[in-house]
Length: 388
Ligand code: NI
Image 1: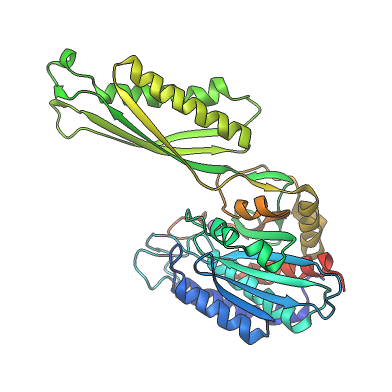
Image 2: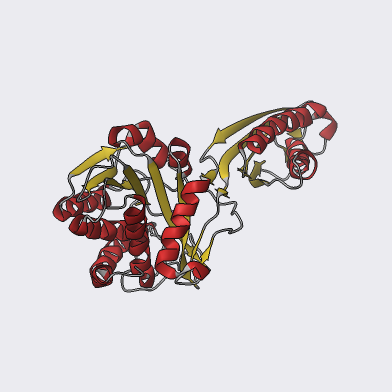
């Protein structure tokens, strides 16, 4: 490459699609409008097969190369869902729907993969089959897991899987990834403490859940400092603390919620085990009871070494080797593409979005300038993994 003329020529058209998605954000699995447009466009491009309703509202398009002798199938995935917040970007194409906005750039991801599908369906300069995958509910809904559970990989014979996310703060014209753990597992915790309510002036007749819950918050911080190898990674954050209604009543119950982030399954298992011991043991120390509910979310997003190399090579073919960081520091945010990487070898890559608000900020907007780079990455990846 770098950017082929045909892809550069699609820039305005794909930008218009992206802004239309941006104006009409949809949440979780309710991406009916978006999925409908995606399916219609894939059919119009001449995809050999377009399947809807995978993982509830997911869409898959199959594009066969000019030659189909290799029998290889490569999956490319984009996410379609938005976030529940009010946009303050002030852009002409800002969200028209109160309380919903594309604050993570999934509008851009969907548009870029659609643009790549158009190019690939026109040119078919590869030997094998490409599955373009559009998933719902990336933002905490487990949409990737639902698609995998719905037979995504087996049904289409997918052998390798790739994903891409924009990275605010990474310069335009750069890509970044690493082999191994790239993003964290994200699990939810809920701790329900039961003590003995009573008069605030008679603490000796009560079991104070405010004190017990406070000790739990403090004690679980020892997991990171005392239980996990300092060279490993773990975050345990308590983010809500609810107890009591009156200044002269010792509350009978307290409820804490929070999140656990880890970069290895071993540390994840160990953290869950230690949380149970500390939560239950701390409560018992005071004569209270506490119940921990540990809810497993997305697993660690771990790139497979060989595929991370292929992805880095495809990015380098577009922007040059010097603009590809192949050893980025992992981040403790999560990405449910992890479920797909647990099902097939593959790699997830960040594409530089330039300066501006971080993802999930109310003034965030996907940078349309990077559309040809993202489309070229997909095209190059297909044409190198499925050489004609
Ligand atoms: Ni995102």
